[in-house]
Length: 138
Image (cartoon, rainbow, N blue to C red; front, side, top):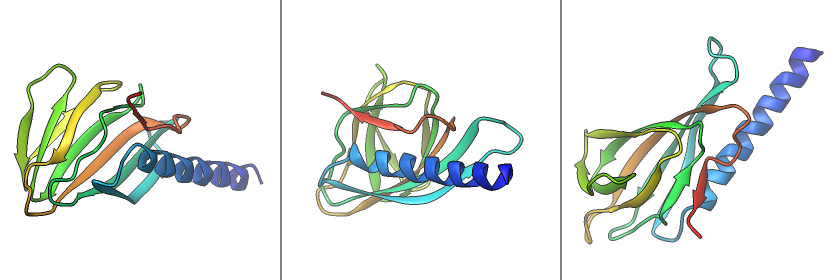
């Protein structure tokens, strides 16, 4: 019975996490849940992946991720311009990747092309109780 309650709580947390990710994005992008699962050998941690698809010229609002979230980002198609923390803005092309340390500000995240779509896979390693994974700037 305890295991059943744990699974339900975990599924609820995952669903809430995926819903909160989408709330920090705007009409210039589309966020689609891809995968979410507890990391069994790291108690209290989850692995959550989302696909972010940008229309030509599309952009995400500047935002910050959960303080516990380590993020690996892989450009699936097109080219995406990104700026994390105080680093320089850089364009990543299909097949390239970057990462974000926990709690860093993501000032620029947009399609580098005005004519072609782009897609990014973002993989979060995050505390299971962090339900707000992405918070837009105010």
